[in-house]
Image (cartoon, rainbow, N blue to C red; front, side):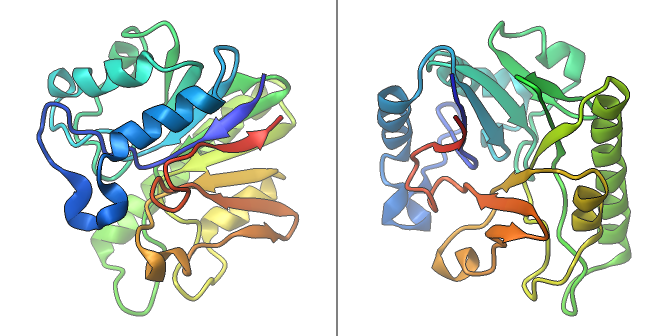
Length: 230
């Protein structure tokens, strides 16, 4: 029994959006995901999938992609990314599959850990951060607090957070998200969203102020799920 993570699956079995236009690493990336997943993941493992799951625009169109994920081994915890326009009400989605849990304003129990999180948003920076961005950023902070406080109120003391967006900006400045991680003594933060070599360099990785930050964008990890916990 182990905990794994992989972000940015970018599936498009119904929407016909080939990903190889973003580089050769994306050629047949669905098969890479499937092969690596089956070789590594067992039925009693849990997999965190923090966003950009399907290119579909509506839940009905995303069902082929979601059923494909459901057919793979393990329990799956899914979080919304910036391209997941199909995302619907939690009650509706969480009634679709027995082995897939959709995370928003809530948390998932893994052993003695609470898996918390929210999508996140771009962090304040010198080049682009509008009033619209601030509104979304504040909303996502609120959703993260709801998730963490729900776990705290239920007695949990150990937290892993999954977000789609990176925790900070390109200058690695401390963000309000990072302040909240420190406030709740979060152990690990996993995230995706970043693509290509230049972007990968901008991702916060490793241990910072006793919190481990783990980038798991699909192309960064070569579509091979990363073990988060044994």
